[in-house]
Length: 423
Image (cartoon, rainbow, N blue to C red; front, top):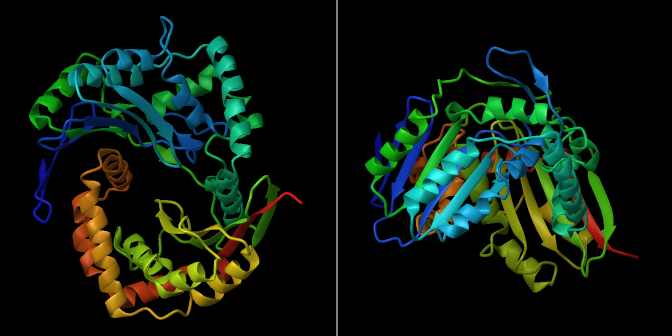
């Protein structure tokens, strides 16, 4: 199928192969770098699920991230990074709450690199020995995260916001949870979530979409995949109340850090897909964006610096807003934000200004393959066409922005994470 965005004069070509794998190509004529991601709809929150035709399974926290690490190891020794480097390509991977992505970027030997990407992600290799070795590596990574103030700030906020939902668990899991991971559990997760029916390959660059699709089709045909049925995923019922209104911690930081969070319901009735998160983003931009009156006041008073940020995150099973950054006085900044955000004026002129800014950011995405790929993957696995964004953005009304502000910025659903310097 071919999708067009007249506003951008951009094209997206998408084809579902016999294996169930979705291949998406965004051709960018003149781009020197080609960028590809191979993404599975499987993230850190997927720890209780039912493989098609099998019994339900519960797996250790952090196993999705652990699996991502193990995929780069080759049965014959060495790792796949060397194979990409030999072609002049750079490779990487990441796991978030809902997806795991493998990627490469290259200016040459694109189809050779594409073959490596497809083949190594579809060739798992787990043994008792290499799994035990990886546990030590990831334990060090987890301990490193514990020493990173920004990571701790966010992690503490998620545990304060959520009582039961696995979004409250660190993506890498805990030292205790990863010690229970076995090769059998890794193969069970791999077999369930790494099937082509649960994945998308995305290519962005100066490539021929039909040639990419045919190259992937030939690669997949040789592997004999049969389409897989739906995967059932279970999440505990999450109460509307936060787990804790406030979490404080002391670390070796020069200045205190503050993050104010608001827990939202992802399934509020009356909101079409994408509309609520666009409206919430607009509301935050109008209230505390760099051009807002409140931001200018806080900056002028020295309560924030240019690293202050506000964002709204929306997934199928959880949603929240978070805003904050470095501040010399977290208590005063918190008090101002909690008091001012629900009642600061929102005007039609401000809405149109922020819409123009957001539209400019959307257009700029198409000049940044890395950010564009992340955004396209994020929307695809929620069943949303990325080219719909401009229409949704333009259609959002001031009344909708007011409604989402009223529902989202409820003090009863607020939690605060603070990190203070060591005494």
